[in-house]
Image 1 (cartoon, helix red, strand yellow):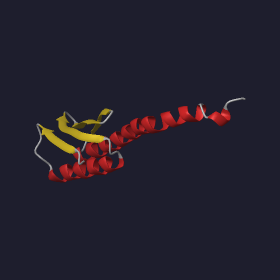
Image 2 (image 1 turned 90 degrees about the vertical axis):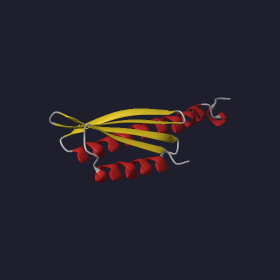
Image 3 (image 1 turned 180 degrees about the vertical axis):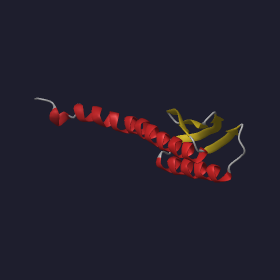
Image 4 (image 1 turned 120 degrees about the vertical axis):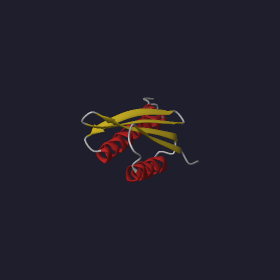
Length: 112
């Protein structure tokens, strides 16, 4: 299933190159983390720079993040990097925690 990607520019003109970068990044994250179903991204101007906010939802997944930078493209790149780290952490906890528990209770490791 292909996740939906919603990108909004708050009080900014729509920047097509940034939009394409974000869409490509979200598609890349969706292929790596198939549990994601929706990406909501908001870019805004805040005084001296730009801020980018994201909310990602999916099966047993809910991640929110933000990034700030002087340039809008830089803020978008930082946001995608943060999202990847957070999604990896959530994904690894879901995958590896049960494996660790199973290894602890392995029958060969129990004293007889």
